[in-house]
Image (cartoon, rainbow, N blue to C red; front, side):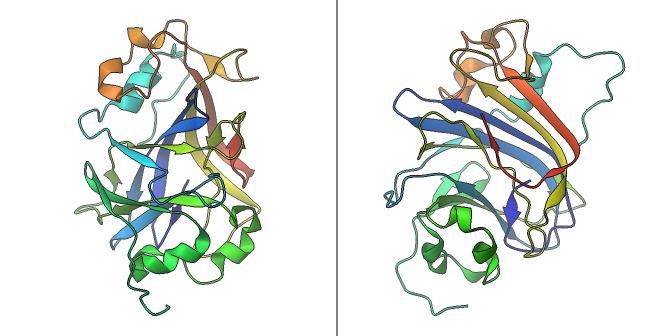
Length: 246
């Protein structure tokens, strides 16, 4: 689960895809279903180098490929026993750049101090980041979401690429923040997907076929390598509340 700037009643069916680029950057694609009574922002901490420029993150629209994660799941054999997937401060005046990305508008926040440059309703409560000192020097991808018109809403995949602080590690943002608190353990309803060079991640499932056999590669804007296999790790239940690194 990601972090939200306001109260969210339900978050479920979270899917995350990651793949490294040769220049030390990383692709990240994120999708989930949620229920909220107000417009909120989804905030993803990302391990960018300190002092990254405001244009260091490139947002990518997958609005026309809503089935991105459905197709990824289709590459894995489904055992007969498997169940189907679940569905402030004074305005400083120099606002952060806002980019339209499909159904969303998105911003890259270079550091915690720069949240003051976002509209108040799209920030976390004061003091939350003090509980997460590991993010002190990180950047943040922020997607502004509209409240669902009726019940729970499934959003199309949110995608971007960013420069990594550690070029040897694939990063999955999975830390949960609940109403301004950071519990030691949290409930997960996640499916993580990745493509890697070299050996498969330990204890991850591998697709029998190459990605080009089950993903519309041309619709991914270069995010998926059609000539490689895809790996998956499913996290359903209660786990230690931390990010996943591969």
